[in-house]
Structure formats: C-alpha cells, structure tokens
Amino acid sequence: MSLTHLVMLCAVLAPLALARTALADTPPRVEVEGGAVVGVRSGELASYKGIPFAAPPVRALRWKAPQPVVPWQGDLAADRFSPMCLQALRAKNSVFYLGEEPSSEDCLYLNVWSTASAGEKRPVMVFIYGGGWTIGSASLPLYSGEPLAKKGAVVVSFNYRVGALGFLAHPELTAEGGGASGNYGLMDMVAALKWVKANIARFGGDPANVTLYGQSAGSVAIALLAASPQSEGLFHRAIGESGGYALGGRLQTLAEGEKAGVAAAEKLKAPSLKALRNLGGDAIVNGDNNMRPVVDGTLLPQQPIETYAAGKQMKVPVLIGSNADEGTAYPVVLTPAAFEADARKRYGAETEALLALYPAKTEDEARASSYALMRDRTFAGPMRRWGIEQSRVAPVFMYHFSRVHPFVDGVGFQQQTPGSRMGAYHGAEMAYAYGTYDVLNRFGATRAWTDADRKYSDAMMGYWLAFARSGDPNAEGLPAWPAYRPDSEQVMLFGQDIKAGALPHKAQLDFFLHRD
Image 1 (tube, rainbow, N blue to C red):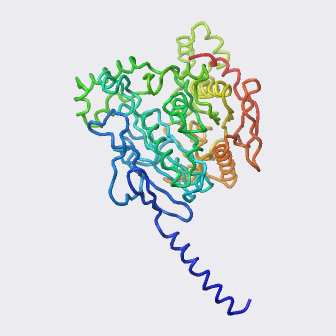
Image 2 (image 1 turned 135 degrees about the vertical axis):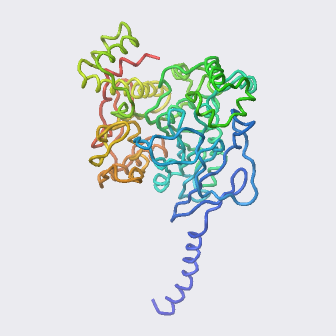
Image 3 (image 1 turned 60 degrees about the vertical axis):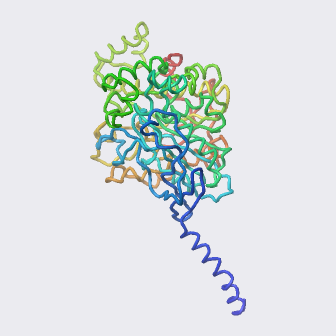
C-alpha cells in the first residue's frame, strides 16, 4: 500500500474510531414507560439502576396493588440502586451478610444490565430474590446481573414488598381490594414482569423469551407465579433454586390470613385500616412481620399443590434443584431425645420409619440428622415434587449441588464455625451460577477462590444461559445434562466435578413425597 493510500485510509477510519470512542463515552439513554432513563456504560456493558416500575406504595397506597408509574420530566439518572423495601437488617456475622443498605417503603424499582443494542433479541433473565418473605433486595451484590449480561443475557432484577408490608391480609383490605388481600409482594412481581414485557426490547431483550430465576423464597415465588393466571404470557422458562411451591406445605387461606392480620393489628393497637396506614413503616416491621402468601382467590385461585397436581400450572420448561447441606444455615440441631420427641409429634405411627432414615441415637447422629431432615423436608423434597409434577406438562432439568466453597482457615459465621462446616449451604450455588463469587470477599478474605472455581462458575453460567436461550441447558463443551423423568430420576450433580447421576437421598425423599 502506498503512503498516499495509507493516509487516505487513516482519514476514513479515524472518524469511525472517534465515533466508537464517543459512543463508548456516552451514557446510555433509553425511553421507557414514564420517561427517559440514563444509565452507566462500562465498556460494552450498560447498566440501569433504580428504574421505577410502579408508583411508590406509600400512605394511601400502602397495601394496595402496585399502581402505574408516575411519569417524570427530563432524564432520570438510573445510576444507583434504589433503597430496598423496608425490613429488618441481617446480622453482620451471618454468612448471608454483604453490607448495609438503605431501606424505604418507596422501593418499587428495577435494574437492567445489557450488552445488547436496541433491536437485538437477547434472552431475558429476571431475578427474584429470597429471604423468607421478610428480607431481601435486588441490590445485594451477590445478585448482580453483570456477569450473566456480559455473557449474552439481558438481566433484570427488582424489589418487591416483604413482611407485613408485602403480605398482610385483613378483612378491610379484602373489602377494599374487591375480595382479595395479602399478596402485595406477589403483585409487585407481576407488575415488574409486565414492565419487562412492555419495555425490555428497548434494551435489546426479547420479550417473548423471558426466564425467571430465583433462590429460596424467590424460587417459591416463581413456582407460585406459574400457578397464577395473572402471570400467563409473562415468562417462558423458570430456574428455581432451593424453593418449591410445597415448601412449608399448604398456604394459608384468605380467612386464615385475615385472622392473622387482625391479630397483628391488635398488637399494634390499630383498630382500623386507617389507623394501620397512619403507623410508621418501622412500627409495622417491628410488629408481627412474619407474613406469607395466601390463597386469595384471585392471584392464587387455589392451593398451588392442587394446581400442580391437576396439571393447571404454566407449561414452561424448568431447571430446578437444591443443595447438599441446606440445613447448616439454620439453628435446627436437636439432642437425641428432642429429635425423637419432635419426630413422634410430627409423624406419629410413622416415627420409626423416619428414625430409620434419620438415626439420632447419639449427639453426632442427631446433629447430622437434624441438618439432613431440614434439607429433605424443607428443600429437596419440595423440589423433587415440583420436578415430578412439572415433568408431566413440560421439560424438566434437575440438579443437586454439593460443591463446598474454599473457605479460608479461621473464618466463621453466625451459623457455623469454622466456615467449612457450612458445607454446600443454602444459597452456596449462587456465587457460581451468577458469576458473583468475588463479592463474598468484599469485607475481607473468606474464600480462597482458584482458577478451578472460576472455570466451574463459567460452566454453571453456561448451563443457566443455555437454558435461558432455548429451554435446554445443554451446550457445546459442557457435560451432557439429561432431562429429569420420574421413572429414572437422573439429575446433574454439581459436586467437585460436574456430571450426571442418580438423584441423591432417594429413600429419604420418598418418605416425604406425598405429604402436604
């Protein structure tokens, strides 16, 4: 190439390079329902945090279904997370603690991460957090959508109301709500999904390919949404981690929820709904805050157990599973005598059969069986039941996670000391599946991650992303993941290595299979 031609080529390419640089330096701006939002660009990744998807549920809107967004003028800076919904804080020595967050009743906001351009149709992954219906937030660093977005998904997370502010049922609320009350947190989820359907194409996502993913109560929520007619058409696949529709058995009826709500109001010395709404949010949270979803007849027309048994749930592919040591995060250890007494109270004539599966003749046996029983009764059993029922109407892929984090020597937590006794605890899979393992060291070294851990995380993210794309987690370069079938019960074993195998603890899980 002659010098003249080279100069001419540089003259053509230079403006293009400058344009790309200018684009990379330009904050991303998107028009959504309510107005324009301006996010933050980091390389190819654009993130938008704190986008309102409903009106603030405060004052007269407390304990109401989410109302439409209040439009705003000008550009809204979507550069930071909103406060989490009002709730108690986690203990600082908990394995689940990842820092302080501001909280507010004005909390119905969502976040989007994307490397796509408008007009693309990337798979959309929408995260729902857990926390036992009483705590949790979309801004917890462990839940960041950045790693999955960098690998090709458009990721969304959102806040929903928790505790009594999210799930209080009450006769006056039922009358006000046209015959239903109590499921405001679930209503928030439906509102967020409607926002996704209406707006996500502007971020390069495909509204016809939405995967819900969530853990613990977030996973339960996904199973409940799949049993709700109000969710029809809002999502197309589901990933549930350690939480099924049968977790805890049957839900309260509306009448039972109303009775609990009246009792909670009496403790707060609030004789009416008006008096309840005049109370500060902190008073509500500090009262009887242990509320759960109810069968309200509208969002949940019947017991989810009955919906699934009848095959009336959404017929979407699911990827579900649980962990080997779910029980270690909870104070469930009983002495041999207490373990047997609890078993006889719960299981009556079947106690001997249970004790044969969960021996507790010594302190060590009682400890191990306490954790195992918590794992199977509360988590693994309901996930298996979900898999069996869903496999009758759609493809199911099930997993069992047993890989233990590489805890640093000397690290301990409120739940277990040393930390290595946590095993593959409740939630341990998320750091790998979401690619957020480094945040667990944000307050000091607690895990000694290695290249092997990082490759393991890449593999798990690969499965989750493949499933989001097509409803099948199998992808090139990854071990084959067989579909779950009740007659063979092959699952993916995420242990030290990743391989397919038989469902663990089958004899124990059989004991709980037909129990509500």
